[in-house]
Image (cartoon, rainbow, N blue to C red; front, side, top):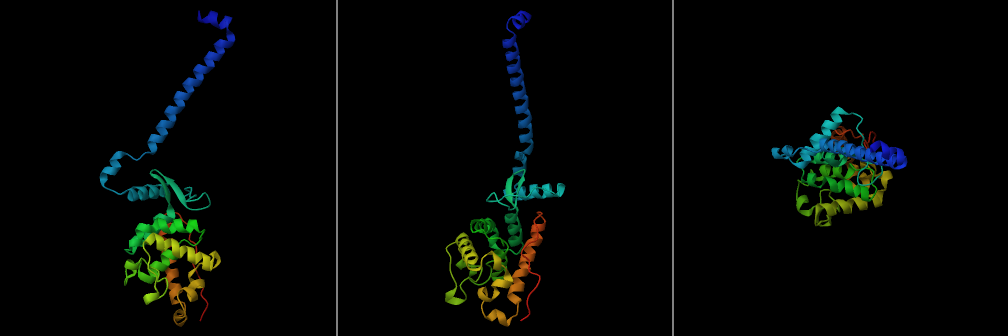
Length: 243
């Protein structure tokens, strides 16, 4: 009967055979893809250890970088050239992880707002993503001195005494100051040396480059933490004019 059908209706026979092959191939392909995807999922038991998502994310990324020095680092909050890596637990911006490590090292509450620094830089196209974080540590140890925490002003923004600005939240402060700095300095001058005289004020001239060198030191420290995630060292100042 099967042979008779083939001889009587050859076109239908080969058409039916092609459909059967395609269906079989589809099932095999789906099974292969499912196995690959499941192999990327973090086991439920990993969450039973009490570790936070950030810790799991960081461990996953560090293991990726340790096994693959050429790990693909691209994309962030935009599709342009930024610093995002795919890990077993999703996507992570390496700059955010770097700032978290940096602020945690100094015990600063700004660690919880690391993503706001990077989002503000992306929003206003700021290239020097290290600068505002470095200034925060240089000025107030990351909002740990005086009333900087109560004012949500870790950057001495506005000057001293009653001139110093107060913000309703840290994310507002980070967004506002980032915007005002890029508007005032532009990317060309967004570094500790070039902004010292206007940001720090006239008294800084009496100190030579002490303020700028201090901020620049913390830019170096941020880059130290960033190297662990494979980030390039950027925005470091190596020369200061004598005064």
